[in-house]
Image (tube, rainbow over all chains, first blue to last red; front, side, top):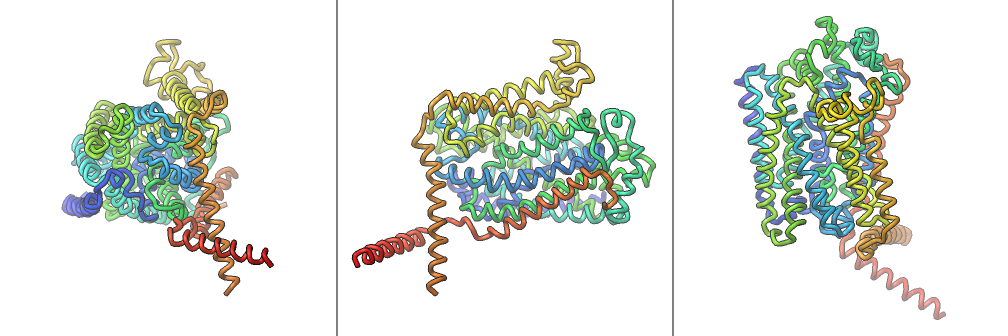
Length: 556
Length: 62
């Protein structure tokens, strides 16, 4: 890469981000501005910010690389991303979260859940889980981004310098602008990601002779799938893995289901619903978000699979063999298959994808500490200092993330840590919080005890699952080996060790929530009635409005 | 179809595009729905409601 072009380009781009961040900083006066953007964000900004936060280097490089290894069956993930991550999230969960959140005066995911069941404990435990586990996901995104920067510059920019660069950049604009700065920069970054991905998709199909020719070519080289992958169920890049095989469970339970439904309980995404003024903005965000996710998730997964044909035509090797690890497939494909100018653009796309996610993650960690943990423990004594505590918490979270990034030391990407860490964090949040959060929106009978039981049982089972049962992670922790001499407590060769813990932790969380709620009384009937009453009132007002307009039209 | 023979992958492509089109259509059809009702609108509606009641009571009186 020519550094005389790259450096001014990056400086120009970062200056624009700095300007947007400064605009956010200028209009951040109150803590509600810092936490929720004053609750009047534009739907375009909200949808792109949601999308750019959701889609990180993890989706593009991590999951794109996984598709390079496992094939097009991973495209069930963008389907769930669109249907669950955009439609269900905005319309089914988003509208109620916004309405209830406004009444409950909630500013964070933990505060929302805590206020809904009138429990400080729920708020504190949510904040603690975010504070403890989110740095794992944040570190993975940071490591992934740094590796790309290092890889695309031919190691001229070292891994350590890349980490320092991303950390400092993100720290500046999260600390300065709060969520307004983040959302403005996210919108720019999201637009760039959208354009970059469309170019990548079209150029890739064009290079391989068109849609049908590319897919047919990929089908013809199915016999090149390594023996090891064939043994676990791989049947080619244009075919689904063999039913009930280890690969089938790995793809569908961990990568597709974990991330596909886990998105609903992501704290950094849930607060996005509360940043808009009305449900109208959420309706509009579905329009923008659906299209955005189709392009930004669908493209890297499709291109990842297609890269096998490109590498095979060029070097006689499939993608994983040519790149060395799944995390290197997309950067290597861009460096070799795409024109040079696109390499520069892709670099900005990657910086955007990483920074937009990192900034929101750090913001979520910062607010989890200041609002959920500190305020949950010490009351409103420190409310006047929310912004200050948040900013200090962000600095602390960035330091923890940097330390984690170095200590995990996965600079070579052998473990495919990006996609795995994403799936783990999404799995933990979905197992512990999705059912209680969903029940808080749709079930009046949810009680404080039921909510706590759901959270704790889900978290307990999912953590136990990762420590002892789910082969890939249990092998790293080594606890199962200590107890029974195997990588997982399930017998060697059993398909059960490939089943993601979310598959059993989520139902257990749900059953606990329902049983404990039915055994106890609703502690705060006034709050519950007020929340659900707001929905009825809104419905009545809308009905009246529709009748009025129909009546006036008839009169005319 | 398009060089793909596995029916589940073909179905997946349909689902993927259907989901995106569904979001586009839903967003477009509800583009202006769900806005906050302003205090003026609420006032007008209650005024209209009151007028209706008056008319009803007058009609009832006849």
